[in-house]
Length: 392
Ligand code: SAH
Ligand code: SF4
Image (cartoon, rainbow, N blue to C red):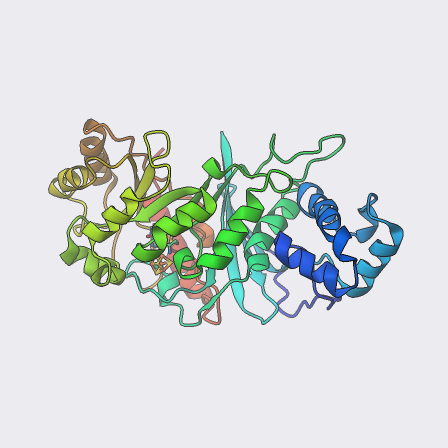
C-alpha cells in the first residue's frame, strides 16, 4: 500500500465555482448568469459539453470553437476545478482508491478496479449512509448527506484525469478504448435515497456526446428502496443490482433493516417492474457470504427458488471484514458449494473476487468521514484480509 498526497490541509487555490460535473440544465443556467444570450445557450452548452466531457479540458483556452469573448467571460466567473483529492491509495492488486474532499469538507470515496477485460469505477452517491446494514462499514458512519450531481459526475471526471483516460490525438470520442469501461453505483450511500441527483449524474455519464459510458455498463445497486425502483429504471435505463443477502424476511430484517419496511416479496415485485427486464437485461442479485448465517445449502436452494421467473444473475460476494464487524466470511469450500447449487440451477454465479482489501477499498469497507481508521485498525484489517484472500 502506498499513500500519495496525504496533505489534509491542501486547499484549492481557485475558489470560483466550477463547471466540471454539471448537467446540461445547470450548465445552461451558469451561461445565462453571465449574460450569454438566450438564443446562443443551446449551442454554447453543446460546445462546452464536448470540452468538459469528451476531452476533459482543464482550461477555457482549450475551447477553441467557443468565441474568445465568451471564453474570457467564462474564465472570469468560473473554473474547471476538479474534486479535491485528499488521499490516493494503490492496492497491491492494482485497485486504486481516492478520497475526495468536497467543498464543505466532507470526504467521499471512489474505487477503480482494473481487470483483464474491463475497468470498473465504483462511485459513491452519499456521504455515509442512513441505512444500517449490519455487515457494512459505511452504515456505521454517522454523518450523512446526499451528493450533488457535480460531486457524483466529478468522481468519474477525476478518475479519468488520474488514470490519464481521456481520448488523445485525433480520437474524438470516449466510446472506445477507455480504461474505465464500467460504472457501478456501489460506493458509499444508498443511491435510491438520492434519486434525482443520481439519475441526472448517470445521464451525464452515459451521454454519447460526452463521457459516453454505455448504459449497459452502468449498474446501480440498491438495498431495496422499493418505491424508487421502477422510476429510476425509466429515468436512466441503466442496469439494476439488488443487495438481497437473505432468502427469508426474518434474516433479511436483521441484515438489511430496510427489509422491515419493504419485505422480500415487495422487493421482487418492484424488480419485475424494471423497464426492459429480459434475459438480455438481467437483474443482478448480490449475496454477501456470511459464515454460518446465510451460507447453507438450504439457503442456496431457497435462493434459486425465490428468483424463479425473474431474469437474474447472482453475484456471491465474500464478506469483506472491517474492524469491529460482527460477521466472518464463509470458507471458500462453503462458497464453492453454494455457488455449485446456484450454477446447477442455471444461474451464472460469479464469486466476486475481493479487490483492494489491503486499502479497505472492497465492497462494504468504505468509510470516510471524521472517523478515520487508526493505524492499529488498518493493520488489523490488513491481517484479516490476508487470512481471507482466495487461494490462487
Ligand atoms: N447502498 C447500496 C450500494 C452500496 S453497497 C446497496 O446496499 O446496494 C454495495 C454492495 O456492497 C452491496 O451489495 C452491499 O450489500 C455490499 N456490501 C456491504 N458491506 C459489505 C461487506 N462488508 N462485504 C461485502 N459486501 C458488502
Ligand atoms: Fe448503506 Fe448499502 Fe451499506 Fe446498507 S450496504 S448500509 S444500504 S451502503
